Image 1 (cartoon, rainbow, N blue to C red):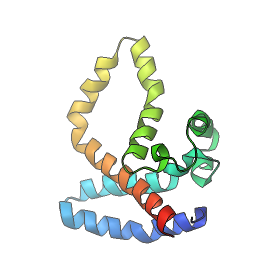
Image 2 (cartoon, rainbow, N blue to C red; image 1 turned 180 degrees about the vertical axis):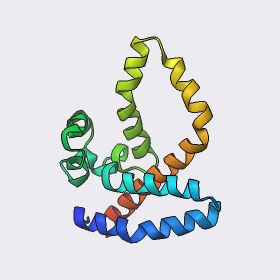
Image 3 (tube, helix red, strand yellow; image 1 turned 120 degrees about the horizontal axis):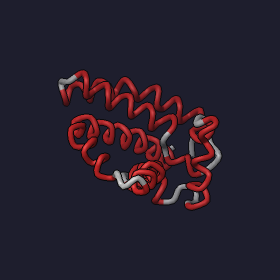
Length: 144
């Protein structure tokens, strides 16, 4: 299992590869930039290691406290934190609970769906980048 420094190096080495491959596939600089930014964010701050006191956890600075209940809910390296797709989905759902609860109390949940629909062209590349960043973290955990 690589330490935090190794994960960071892997991200630095793979970022140009992700950029080139994404651009070759999409031929769109905007989509490439969105995927790349999401990939870097996921790699450094939104990966499976938020389930323990780690570099990604500490990078949230004063906001790291929001991840403490998450750490209590899941054991380190469970399928819910390090699983492909499911780990990213669980973190997104966990992070979305507070705004969704606020919107429910304000009876304004419909406004969030009205906001998401016209931005689906941005949302999909964000999700792809987040999953790629999480996947490279998990792959390196199990191969190195």
